[in-house]
Length: 589
Image (cartoon, helix red, strand yellow):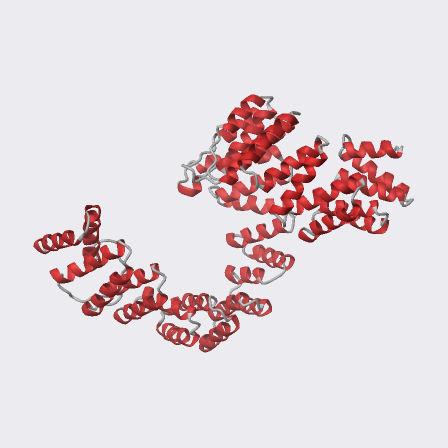
């Protein structure tokens, strides 16, 4: 054997055209030896493997096939390994040929090799699953039915339910969902009274969108097995959320230790905005399993949702402590650190907020949140009154792509605007536009800054260019249209622009506000009121309230106008649009 390896290794080395591939030859030799002798973690076979001597010729064929594949020639590798598999009757070589064809996206050759693999290892579950995968792809439901009919007949009674669910999940991948479900029904007909068959049919019905049938089948399972979590979870999946919550709640009364059901119930409560009840359920989950970091984290998020900052902080600190014993992806504390920073910033402890974010690691560029965290740190520095330090910090952040570079420019300009330095912000944006003259985001920001400085010509030119570059930018249409409406000029064009924005984003309350305002300018008061009321209902913003109030005032509904203005004053007493409108109309709400 040693002599054979040495001789074949020499031949393989001579076959390599350059020295860079000598190590490839050695690796291929090792791989070939493992393939024939099962030295490492190769798949276990239920079938007896052939007794084949590792001749020099056979070893050489395998090693050259692997080298060919590593050098990009999948065809030669495939043909060699497939023929050797036929010669030796070794299913592992057929499996390797199938892998090579699949990696090259050659489905025909892959199926040919899988057929041989299954022929050589008829009891191999892995070979059968590959084969059935191809049958699904080719929509050959009859063959799937045939294979699983035999599998069900030969299954251990304890594994029968698992096999049924395997069949259901495989069939659910078929293109024709109705035909796949009919095949499942036919397949399970001999077992139709069993709870396992009802469960598989429930899952299959849900997959094809027949929720009524799914609930009916799952209820049959619950009748026989009142503690079946899978059954009640299927009912919840196939029911409206309110009904799902009732079903899960009733199940938990009788089965309080059903953790998966409680987790599903708690998640549905969050969707239903029943935050207090959801928190109660997650507290139960955390109490029953104190090391469940996901439950602890969720409790922190729910506490933030309920404005319980101190409680949220406590949960996130507990979460960080629990992570100390974790490894891998479970160990990433980024989201908790960001939330702790937000809590600190809300109480204006910007130093603590900064310290939390400083603990976020980049993981060698593999943490997608890291860049945004660094940008947020610059704004925290600015809030501490350290504008120069904030600018220095943001200028040293390295962008990994153009989008991040644009974000850095926008963020630096925003820092300066927030600090009351619009001229310096304008300079930053102008320099950015020189680097990326056709970037819609920079042009839009420049337009908004120009508007704030009453540079109407620059604002209009920039917005028109944004519309040209990004014809689906609803914000650009809206901003330009609103500018015309607010100045009471070019109202016909303003209507066209704002209606275009509304088509692109029909549920945007600020666009509806613009639409109502331009209709008011055109004296179409009923239309104006309708649009503004809808906008105000969606978002009770002070600016929207100001516009709605003026429309109502003009229409003679002065009490309603005063009420809306009073509410707006309570929420935003310093709003400049509201103040100027009340002064102009000489109104004291």
